[in-house]
Image 1 (spheres, helix red, strand yellow):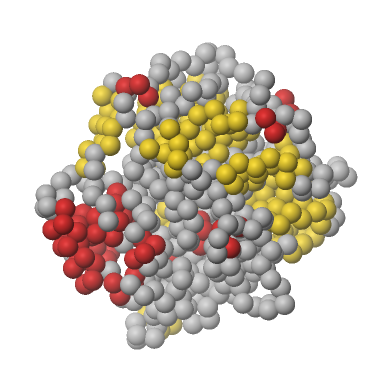
Image 2 (cartoon, one colour):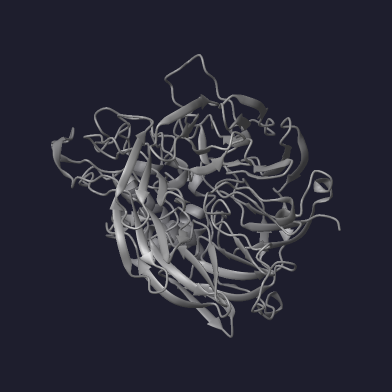
Length: 624
């Protein structure tokens, strides 16, 4: 869960109060509300006093390395910090502050003033989408298909071992007022549909990076886009951080409907929706895991889940709650106040669809409080039509953890290790003709299950594992091997086995047997920041090539035969972006790249856990 939630006290919020977004004939202009004082020094001085009284107990000398210090927070944009105070995880702590005081804190922490940002007319271009497109070039969803494999054929990708070394940067697009890029784009025709943490969604010309249209969601977007063509209609489906789910007409950029899918008030979304058979399946997690930093907060009552919405209207068809029992008073906290449970088991990842069996597969995270349940750190199979639980496979038991651990009163008595299934399960047929459901856990273990029953077929350990260890965002499979990105970030590993050391890198396992085919250790990052060598982002695979990004900002191509690196590009640099906004590359985390029509699209920038901030989407193209 750690990497999926941004387990810091401050994260990008769901809304942007204090920011006025204006669209004039498709042109985006962002205007900030005035700070509490026009005097820059006075504003920051006031913010420093408020920070000392309100924020310093948690952020000045954080006991938990996953809680950001003032130094770490200073690298964030002031808009991001303001969002967290207004409507994010820090809203309860900031509830007594006026808007001017929140703005002052944001400007003190970031050492930057809130400012206006506009995108010039030259950044826009005419949008047109032919009635009949070539679906060969379309790409959407977390894994690119219903099965979540992350696999593209040579015809679809247009990138091969013979031409991969000719990949050159064609254009970059810089997202305004952001310091990380984590929403996975979709490709439809000649357009890239992508969102960002500000809630803005753009249609970018695939060949130039120019903006065709722009639409504003209600909250930040952390997941990917799904495109559906149906009888001439082309619709984009996605969810924002507050679980508002949208259907957008791609041809016009107009929102067709919007529905909040989450049941709990603290529900949130990080996983890409899945769309099939007239339903939109929305994964549900919860920000309650961070609200526990307030010892007086009643921890915990929320549950992870999946909502099925009607794809035409947004109407809720069914809702699956991962923790079936309602929370009740469980025991007492160290401060004498009651604990509530069971809770947690969030669904951070995108669902995977099994058309043949009529099943929907999800992965779950840890319990937030005791008592623990058998549905945490598990793979579940649900009935596509009803949401009923068909089978449940729990990989790690007794994992109760939240951000209060280990020192705050809301930490469960028996602290767990935060070993989620944060990736979308993969349904793939092996060389023996049999289908398997593959999933990697933050424990560092890859599992193969019988998709019909959930029975364990094999498991293979590739990493030490931990809150920032093991498999975070995903794997990819080509029918013979499954390729796993192992993070093993040294900032947060499990202390259980002292004989096993961190082993970040890309691993290839035989799908049938689970045996290791090859391992390609992450190249050592420059300088002393060795943890930046971790591979946390999900990879993709095309015939002969695995593409995977690293926390050190490199996007690399690995040979599927032996794991040798055959192409490497360092994205950490400044860019002259197509939209005229200052662009900067950073760490590559979360979403996998996209290979389509001889082009490779890569997000660069992830501001948390000591990683490198950035705000660009990069488009590479092979020599033709």
